[in-house]
Image 1 (cartoon, one colour):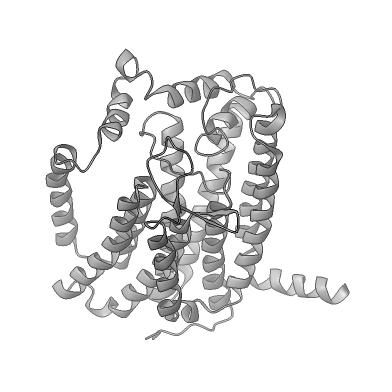
Image 2 (cartoon, rainbow, N blue to C red):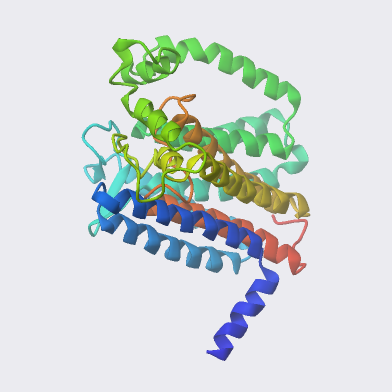
Length: 379
């Protein structure tokens, strides 16, 4: 036992313990919120057990990843990318599952009775492979050939997940791609060209049949919240707003929440439950914790002397920051509901594991640079 605690002590001396503590604070508060949601049978106790188990498994995965040189993991892209890609492709076969009949996507697999969302793990694999790609071409990043190859690299997960029907996750991949490319030093001429392409693409997406009617209605509902024709579409966000507003400054207490009309309160709309349970102060605390995690990872990127480590941290930052902003925006009715979870807090084993794996990569960058084991050339 003494040897075990000695190992823990040695690990804490070399790791970014603040990032671990912030992550555990987020997860701990998330489990407490789920306990409140389960208080009157809104969800089964199994959700809490799954969340706690996923957090423990995620923490273990983060520790294991932190002990492996991130350069080695990146170079193993020929192993983890095909595996992640294979799992995503399986969702297009009869093995693909819908979480609910009302949700028009097949983003899940069921393996030995356990639900698995491959896109969550594909995010981690994409961050590693794209970071490696960027580091290999860093000296000639802005050549036309490299820009086209990088765009093709980024388009693969975005299009795959879009055709899977999970546009929320596809949007997260797009944000990861854009922020990593921007941080790597892409020339402004390409940024301006991309902005122009987006402006042209918006009417094509809207009128070209890419967006279905339900997606259009969700978007329009944000701007016509009082219109009766959007009543059903806006139902979830409407009651989420009531729940948040009823909590006041300090909230009603975890086990004294009255508004339980919000569908998926344990998942995408756990922030609305927090608004009623722990009030404005609690919501600000959640946002502050998530912001602290993201900024800590971004700080690790700035202190890393090699391009690969910087790219990895920016990718993890982009994943967590974009999910947090979009989810809170959904709960506050400033963004349409697109099925994006709140990192650490939303119920779901795949989401929790993916989050902690991202943290593990950021820890690896921190630890191996603290030890002075980095190298400028990782090719």
